[in-house]
Length: 253
Image: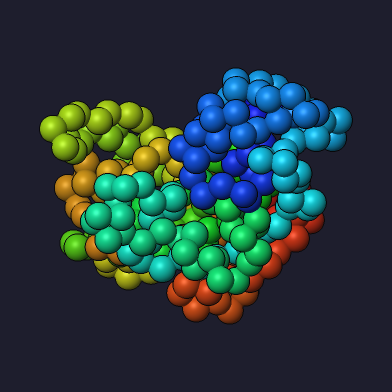
């Protein structure tokens, strides 16, 4: 499989940011088969080419790793940019910094995302194929959440969610509108429900309830298809290794 040069360098673990990758290429510090390459979009097959940074040979991680994380509140599912650092944001990746090799840490990616204040099941991996396949809306992979709301959930709200909600909310001065697919929802108490959706639009569940005149006070993902968080006995912020075979059985079989 061919990779672009900047993709290879981002995965190899030598660089701490995409800007460092680009600068190394533009500075002429990168060679492919001993030829200087200054084109970040240059494509090649890593198995057939030798890549060096200032004479040091670089390699891709030898095998992918998979982690199941019980995501705590207050963490975002992306690497921190300068603005987020100034705001003292915390990234889920920091939970892994001292627990894995640096080359692994730099190539970790979340499989989909959970909002900063949402807790629960989150897969984290170096496997790019998994990262793209699970959130694919055409696969209709089911994710179940425990939803706690500020007000009791009415019969009318339940009916709307089961049929599909015409979401219409204004955030940051812009109007967001979309139609959700029919979902499965069952009450655990008047203000708490288990909700299963097979799509994952941005802040979808919170926006559904806002549109219906209620508001989510806490959101926790309990499962993704057959992958059930409570079976792993993980506290908030804890994670464990999991195999691709286990993921395939739970999500795709």
